[in-house]
Length: 259
Image (cartoon, rainbow, N blue to C red; front, side, top):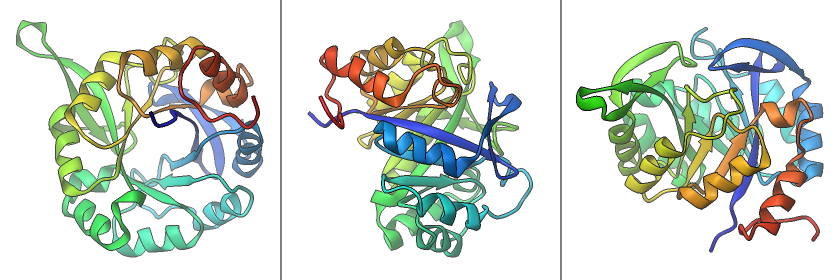
């Protein structure tokens, strides 16, 4: 069985790491380069860097910041935020990122997923899906896809969209529960389970991690390949190493720097 991954996320606004609850009430969490170096020392498997206002502000990612982070870490590094062309993907990969994450422009221009996958290889193309719970007839659960940093609803169903992006060539899905984001109540296990069952590519679950057991429940009860978190790491409630050691003792396949 492949090792499960623990991935800290750096949400970037105006060059600083921030974190909020359900995509709002953002507060400062520190310098991205400094934080990235700490997470590497703690044994994080990967790092995700999301420029959360790039799409909404219709601007490009801060390439200089990508370069600065990449020069200070050796672990795989995913970058997302407002990416809308092959040229931008090339520039970000050239700046040192290992993967890029498409969200808003994947929805607006789905052909970008296939073109990027064909040109750069699907191993470096991640599609991020921000999903919010809605109710349908008979209270059957379904989730709606949002774009522009969670500001704009679409008419896409999260399950249908997940299948489509996998078919278009995405190598991985970064799935964020908008309802659970920043709440520290645990991952949205039902959403994650359902998405990971309808696709045959890795799913990274995001939104809601508040304690070590939340990661254990995620890997025990869903087919998620990785758990992503921000708040519990940024504010020192847990280290990446503490989470990984807990999971190792619980029998979850995990990579440890030392046992």
